[in-house]
Structures are given as structure tokens and as C-alpha cells.
Length: 574
Image (cartoon, rainbow, N blue to C red; front, side, top):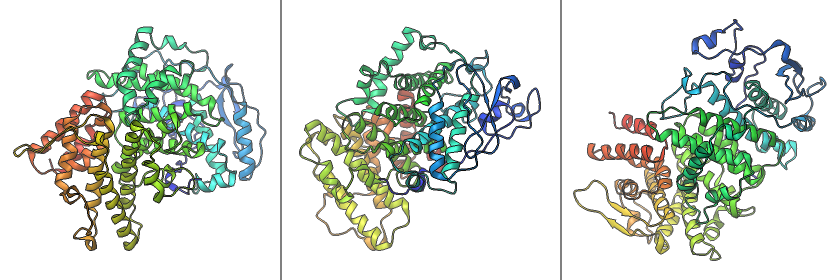
């Protein structure tokens, strides 16, 4: 089982029981001024009020007051008797009973008014999903609540262990379940219940084909960057009847299309597809997450990371996925699609760790099968049973693992000096071995360091070599940057000369690799390495090249980079 990790705790949500539906979705206190409340007036939101005749009272276990929920033909009232606040174990059972009563609902994908999404006051630019959009914010919170509630209600652990190991914080398990359940209910409150349009009313056959083509040619290869079997791309041939996964695929494809059309805000189509994805996921909340559900959640997490800067949104969604992985006992050697889903998520987790200067949300030990320790990692990753292509993939994954260990070492700040130095030397040695033992396909085809040019030209043939080598240089920068005084000079080890290179040399290699290789998945994965390397550049010419490179990445792939440009310019004191 996964050890206790306070990073995966869901923040408690405010309880909102009265006021307009917009304030409920935003979790704001409503002054109940009619016809338009003060909050909606200030923010220029549409103020929607529930009909008094269409509400009924729902008593949720652990709550002494009734909550108003729309009564509709599709979502029948859940009958629950008022009860005293139960103990953890009984609350766990009560919530599962409550969820068993919830039936799939037909939810319209049209906005709650005739107004087009792009015409609303909160329409936003292509650079990022707006943080002030009430509708997108509601969808984000609903996805996160879904992942946490799914993990909590399907865990094989006992309720006591679940509370202690996964979601330990100041709230009892009962209160956490209650808060998350209300978050899911809020999603229903904000929709016009009834029979929504069929999927073909969202996309024409031509649009559907264009989005699926975009996924196969561009987005799928992002997700399959270290997977020669192309599991994510091959999903399309297996998901014709899998509504959540198909909707997630169409959602991220639509979002990328929006991002690449420079003069167009996030489209109504993207919003409606995102909403439809959640309407298919919500009825599965009481079920143990299968691989398809986890793949859908990972794709939607990728959607969020592609669309915005590293606000709390990143962390919230990654925490939710990490919780699902714990429940499903998913790790880096699970095999098949489960393994592909894990490594796709872990690359995002490592980039999040670099961005937030923290350890990964899933500890490195839990990337390995049960009863395996970090000391077993090298043998596992370099197992001779892997064929040539899989061996190359796992060699790159081993560098992801080493980079995660470096992040934990340099950002944790809770190691004693002796332990820090011991781990530092071990990682330094492992990085050297990784560099020296690279298989032939992990070596560059061309490597040119020419005087008078700011950055080298380093060309590779395959994505694992591109991104794996770039992460190696990033790990070396972080490791050398945080070297203690006692370790200076470097330990006397029989290492490759590259291990003695300067921080600037490694930083220039990071930039040179992205300049020389156009693989879109590797360009997206380079955002945080370029941030680490860019901070070391002092020449105006070098800085200009990096800024233009980041702009080209966003214009080519749709992955948001503008926020990193601003961070670098601030660091350079522009």
C-alpha cells in the first residue's frame, strides 16, 4: 500500500445551501438579492435561481440540515432518513448506499441559456483556460471531486485505513465524504436536467473525423512518447462504445484546435465535450476504476496542464489521479495500457514537481511493484527480458525515475546532512551509469558543438532518446546546483567526462536538444527543463532564442508556454 502522504489530501469545500445556482457552483456566499445577486452583478455572471416548486429536501448522512436538489424526471429524489452523525465505518457504508441509488442522468450539453459560450463576459484568450470562468471552474472541480470520491468509496482498504493512509487531515472521513458528495451534487444543480442532445448534435460527422484525426496524428503520440506500442493512440480502435474515454479524446483534441487558431477563444464545442465527459464519468463513481476510466482522467489532466499555468488546478487534478492510482494498485510495471497510463501520468507528475519545487505526488517507491525497494529499481528497469523497443522505453523511464529522486532530494529539505550526501553520491553514480550504459539508439545521430553559436545541435532518432537525454541534463543541473560544500570537489569516482561538465554546458544541451528535434511530445515535455536551463543564461542572444523557442512550442503544439516566458523574463529582470 502507499504510505501516508499529506500531499494527496482534498481541500475541504465550503458548504453552500442557499442562494443562486451560480454562487453555489462558485462556492460563494450569496446575498440572495433578486433578480440578480450582488456577486453575479460584480462579476457580470448570469444569475440563475432554482425554482421553488422543483426542489425537494435531501438528508445526507452526517448533515443535520436538508440540502436542496433539483427534482427532475431523470434524477429521482434520494430518500434518506435523518440520522445522527455516524462513526467512520457506518458513514462509509451509508455513502456507498447513497451512491447506489444514483442513476445515470441524461444531461444537456447546451449552456444554461441561449447565449453562446464565446459570447459570455468571461470569454478568454487562447493562452489559457480562464480562471474566472464559472462554468469551466465548475467542471474542473467536478472532475477532481469525482476522482477523490471514486478513490474513497472503492478503496480495498478498511474505512479506518482509508482515512489514515490516503486522506488524513483535520476532517473526519465522514466530513470528507460529505463534502465531496456535495461537490458532485453541485454539478447537477448547475445543469438543466432533461434529455440532452445526442453526441452527433455536438459534433458533425466531419468535425468528429477532424478531431479524431488530430488525436491520432498529434495528441496520441504526445501521450505515447515512451511507448513503442502506442497504447494511447491505439485506444481509438477499442473505445467506439466507451463514452467517457471517447469524450475525453475529443475534448483534448478540440482544445488543441482552439489553441492553434490564434484568433479564437475556447470554443463552445470544447466546453460541451468536457461537460459530456463528466456526465459519462459521474455514474461510474461508485465503481472500482477500470483502466478506461483512469485513462480518461489522465487525458483530462493533460487537458488542464496543456491549457493553463501551474495554478492549483494542476495540483488538484494530479492529486485526484494519484488517489485513483493508489486504489487501483497501478505502478510502472503493471503491463499493457495500465502501464502506459501510469507513465503518462508520472511524466506530468515530475514536471509538476520541478515547477512547484517539491517531491512527486506519488513517491518513487510506489512506482515499483510491491515488495520492491529503490535499490531494486535499476535491475527492474534494465531487465534483460525486455525486447529492443521496450528496453529503450524502460531506459528512458528509468531516467524519469532518477529525475524524480533528484527532485525529492533537492526539494524535500528534511534530510540530515549525512543522509543527503549519501543519497547525492548514489544519484550522481546512477546518473553516470545511465549515461555510460546508454543503448545505441539512445545516442545522438549528430552532436555539433561549434564555436560562435549559442547552443549545440544534438539530433536524435527516437522520442525516448530526445526527452530522456534532456531529463538527464536537467537532473545534472539540479543535482550540481544543490551540491553541499563537503562534496566539493566532486567525489573521486571513475565517471564519464560529461559528469564533470559545468552547469552552463548542461543547460545549453537542454536548449540545443529542443532546437534540433521537432517531436511534439518532446517539445511539450521540455517546458520545465527549459525553465531550469533558461535561468542560467545571461546573454541577451541566448535569452531571446529561448523565448522564441517557447513561443514556437505553443504555436506548434498548443501547449501553454506564455507563463514560463513571463517567469524567465522576470528572473532575467526584464
